[in-house]
Amino acid sequence: GENVEQHPSTLSVQEGDSAVIKCTYSDSASNYFPWYKQELGKGPQLIIDIRSNVGEKKDQRIAVTLNKTAKHFSLHITETQPEDSAVYFCAASLNDMRFGAGTRLTVKP
Amino acid sequence: DAGITQSPRHKVTETGTPVTLRCHQTENHRYMYWYRQDPGHGLRLIHYSYGVKDTDKGEVSDGYSVSRSKTEDFLLTLESATSSQTSVYFCAIATRGTSGRVNTGELFFGEGSRLTVL
Image (cartoon, rainbow over all chains, first blue to last red; front, side):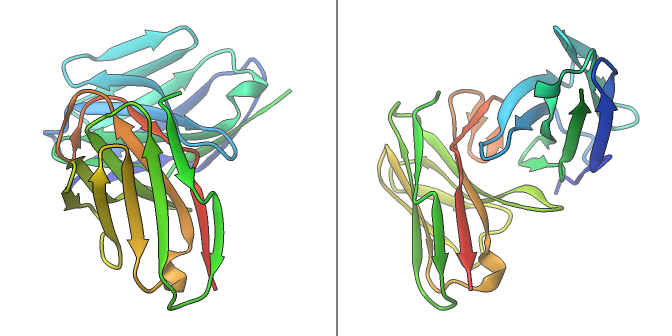
């Protein structure tokens, strides 16, 4: 089955800086790659997703890039704010959806 | 808000006792999922349902059973809880882009049920 690896496990940035979280996947046929944000005590919430026929997608301060040849995709958050502090999960889906282990992002004011 | 309610939100139990977690949705969505979340493992699928009385296993189904007798309720049962089942359990629904366990659309998660097995 699909295997998703996510790095780093923790990330600390200063407010206003950019944050990048990277994921790799094993099944080259996977075709859907969502990113979820989980705040303390809450369930994960979808923040952005990308499909295999697209290389990049942006939504305000958030962007996701996909490199199908290298089988990796990344989440980019620009101009980080304290409210971006949370755990972020990537996932890859084909016949099954598998999640990465998560990245705890801390934005220091 | 996708209208998902999980209960109980917190439970402490002893090894060997049965435990049932309930997921209730108010919007009649067909697909419902149970995940467990553990440090270092992200979210792992336990079981899912694609309709009333229609369920199937996920990645980590051993030791768990599920039932769905009504569209709105999806129950997760641990017949004899073990310490390795200490975890946070999340219910999720899919509103589109789903065929069985394959999901290419947004999942809406409940707020989780924290289970501690002593």
